[in-house]
Image (tube, rainbow, N blue to C red; front, side):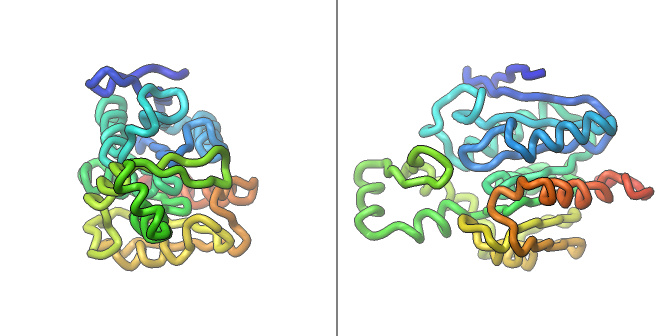
Length: 254
């Protein structure tokens, strides 16, 4: 059941908490995505069937949440995640982040190291505002963005995407890939090698930057960016199972 959660500034977030045993699986959607996508829905069905606690939600300006997409930044969307986590969960967490959600999962793990027992990235896209947006812009596009504050970019997934100067400049406050990342919890990174949006080498670079030793990168040779085919979802379930203790071991704890 979807409930409303006030961020504290009058903007309400759409959230779906699912009670169950620990650790709580938290799904973090991607840029312009929401909690109704294939991966989130798959995890929700899986957790409901096994009695696992789960939390999914829409960032402000996304899906059923309030607010404007154009007001969004990495700081704001990361705050959304922490508001939902802090108010609606207790105990250890397994963060599952898709694309931009992978970056937000990393930021949440850094902000709440005492809570995060494990992390799964699906085509994780840390630093995407700089490496995949700003670096790809032609000089005239950069000039328009800086002078007008907004730029419309074509999208393969729907209408053109509104990119704001605030999104790019705020993203620079959260860049991770140029320095060691002090996350020691187990991390699993799934990435399709046919991903046209986020190069699969990003996951290798991320793995190298993470401080923990228990880091694995799983490459899907014909996998696209969404990783939402039945085989991809099955792989996600297989990857998550040991972290939840479903292989006969103990679930991860902090």
